[in-house]
Length: 209
Ligand code: ADP
Ligand code: ADP
Image (cartoon, rainbow, N blue to C red; front, side, top):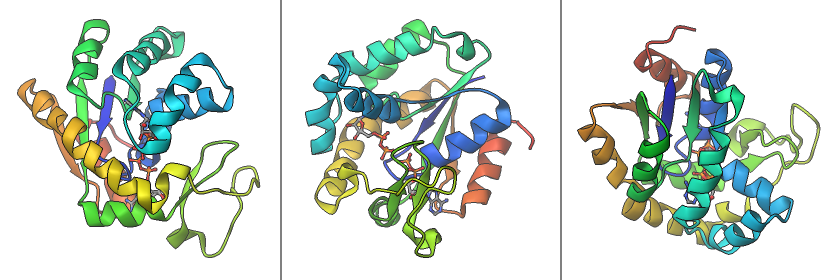
């Protein structure tokens, strides 16, 4: 099954994609992770993306569309995938429709007040990308998987968070309508506890644990 996880920054797309992908045995394709890796490796794509990401703006459509198009040709995508953080504009969705058939779009809905708390408390492992929240870390500062010291993403600092939420409402939220009209949208209440959200997503995908 080819799946899109749609939702504002901080909705839990990455957290849920990791769990659901492990459950379904399909890859998680996160454009945010791919772009951060490109920046770390100072590739041409990374150089093009950095200033936009630092400012909380979207990276130009052509750059993101090209990396997703290439990634979807990899053999591990043959039996399905979860797109986490792509598409984020109607232009990206239209381009995607030309090179991929999407079966389901899961919109993870969360109110802005909750998102601000989630983003400002998010901590990530710079080595493996695992995501945590300070509220659940009880003072722990290292990654449970590899012991690396956790960091706060630059774009999770307060001055960028509000900007990213505005960008979401202006440029990405129109995709809810776009996919509803195609009849493949389902909505999950992402403000519930983590496990409830996972169960709701698996139910809506018709998958069992
Ligand atoms: P996104 O990929 O949509 O930006 P993340 O998966 O990175 O969102 O989650 C954002 C933050 O919220 C992280 O710190 C994560 O640990 C936390 N989080 C995710 N889902 C939940 C949930 N259901 N309840 C509480 N916190 C959550
Ligand atoms: P979040 O998990 O908080 O939603 P991501 O890790 O998905 O954030 O994305 C981080 C940043 O990477 C975005 O603010 C944007 O600058 C860039 N980015 C990621 N995906 C896309 C995309 N599909 N189109 C344009 N920019 C993107």
